[in-house]
Length: 85
Length: 444
Image 1 (cartoon, one colour):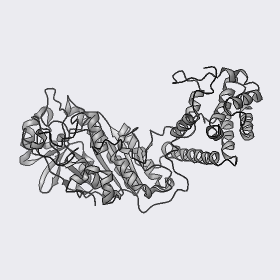
Image 2 (tube, one colour; image 1 turned 135 degrees about the vertical axis):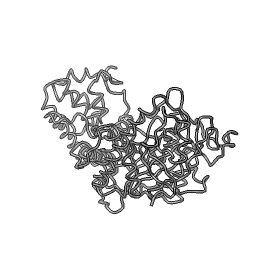
Image 3 (cartoon, helix red, strand yellow; image 1 turned 45 degrees about the horizontal axis):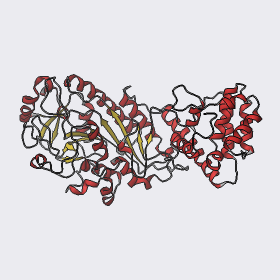
Image 4 (cartoon, one colour; image 1 turned 180 degrees about the vertical axis):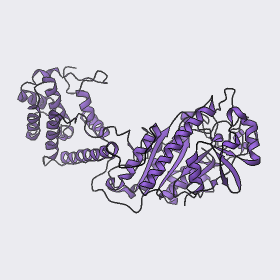
């Protein structure tokens, strides 16, 4: 979990840096962001509880990069993703 | 990459996630309050090779055997030594080891003489014939490993970790692994089936990014909602339970390691003092953590004094004495002074004969300190080497003592006190069977 958090912070010294641009591009629209993550990682099967958690969390930030990071963090650290997908 | 989707496998992520929060080793809930039967072993590793020839010095008639080789540039004057008696013979501790002397004279500290890695007992003749000689003697990395591993079977585990393997039933339901290193990854603490917790000055356990900001709190709330959601998917729910347990244990440990330590004893601000403070904090929380047996590893370095031995060693042993003294006081404060045994290990002893830089070089057998209320102290154990250069105990020409006691015997005596039974001892210390004396008797 903490490694995912670390990766998503895009630290300059990180061993791997994911390209979050596609997610950041749609991050102002929470439903579009959820749909993209759902399609990329969960084959469209993201449970509603996770979607709602992302909506609640993203309501606290307007910064697209931060929104993308938060949404990806919640999705990728969920057991739904790690076990089911 | 175009986007982030397929670059990290799900299993790799899960593995990293587990490793990051140490969930793999953190057991389940329900801390058991176990008060009566608590025991802890604390290994203080002196990295670099402690010069134990200047840690314990013979006094009286044998002092001349010492002083004629060490001389004033690398030897200690007899009148500064701290006298102790052993089986009718007088010895002196290094002048900085004031607390060790006091504990020794109270019967709560001891020393085991001329200990080193051995496969089986060997004579000097056998050494010269290269019979059953441990590999890579005199090499720091190899001998650090040999002391921690206490096995020649090539297993990548340490005798502390294997002791934890043998005793793991004693900590059923504990929130923390039996082995804990306050000094990074240490072979000593790694078992064949159990692993250590590594604490590092309270380095944040738990979820990173939980900084208390509204966004972070919202994230963590959402995370918790997802964890708590009863999806009906067995594996998902099992994973969620494990994650939840790990997070809760992380919170407990963060509090233990970084909050008010609740210990009046003041530890010195050096590295070893800080590590032993962490150990004391964890011991204090033993009931919350549900542990009845613990094995700790702490360390300090700088002992590789190839030059300027006297001044360097004085500084090192000042710090060692202060740290161990504070730790012993803390065990008294916590009411566990008879339950906690602290002992030293080191790469090797140093040459008795000095080099041309007023330092000493890598050697083999050396003396080690054992402290605690369960130690049958006030005397030493094992045999002090004959200090003659090229004499019966010197396998070189500068006083490289052939150990008369093995690391296996040293470890087995403490592991046996800890609760490891005789049959298990041969698993913990595979070479022990090669030694007729399986218990050196220095533990009550």
